[in-house]
Amino acid sequence: MEIPQIFKAFQRSSRDGAWVAVVISKRGIHIAQAKYLGTRPQVTKCAFYPLAEVSASALEKVRKDAHFDNSRFTTLLSASEYQLMMVDAPNVPVDELKTAIRWKIKDALSYHVDDATVDVLQIPSNKYGSDRPQSLYAVAASNETIRKRIALFEKAKIELSVIDIPEMAQRNIAALFEMESRGLAMLTFGDEGGMLTITCDGELFLARRIDISLGQLQDADENLRQQYLDRVELEVQRSLDYFDRQFQHIPVSRILLSAPQSLGLDKLLTNSLGMPVEMLDLAQGMDIFAVPELSDSEFASYALPVLGAALRQEKKAL
Image (cartoon, rainbow, N blue to C red; front, side):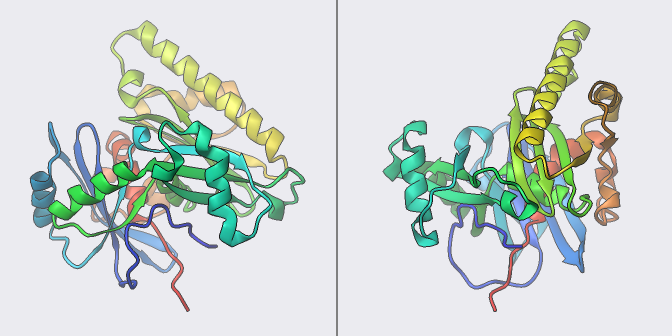
């Protein structure tokens, strides 16, 4: 399986060792480090540094405190910093694909397409016997957004190798819990809202944002909280119905849920969807012995994006 390069910041020779993910959120800085021991990853560090405002000096302090030297660094864009669009694959040679995609998405951007950084994620539906037209995801962010992110990390003496997106980070985690040739739906909630992904054999087939944050699901007002839960239920049902229509050759076997267990969202969705909904237990897919906090469902919910980013794998050049 080829792992796509999302917004690769620099082309440099590969270094052995673990990836270190440093992700900026509204509440502060999340960091994680993971390495693969065979097919099972080991999380060596996962921590959160609360900050009212993130600066280059704060990032540098985190790097020094965590003792991340001679590491490969990656980060994630926030939801407002990029667009992820499903488009029909153009019938062009591979080396012309990105140019053709730029033309397809230019009207959907709020800035000129010449000022965009664009990458492509293939959706390999044909290999599963589907007769639907080949589709792909186009990922776009403004060049200015990418430049600012790289500059911020450079000031903190953090040399970024890759700038990734949360959908791919969630795919990295989902891949550890899949059953062969069966779709896995993964529903997560954090500061930026909810995200539903459906993956199969390590490939991302569907990604949907749900405009409801973890904080809203924990709202003290019971009526508001119920409204949010009802909206989540509706969005998940619609997404599963869409996936079944578009990718009917890939059965979705279950939903993995990352949210505080106290919400009871797993029971609500099981009853309404008629499908197994299981709480995500990270220990079933990776070694979290060094970070026991990841056994806590609320800590894990907020840490999931940075953890997924640190679980990045790449094919080594032959």
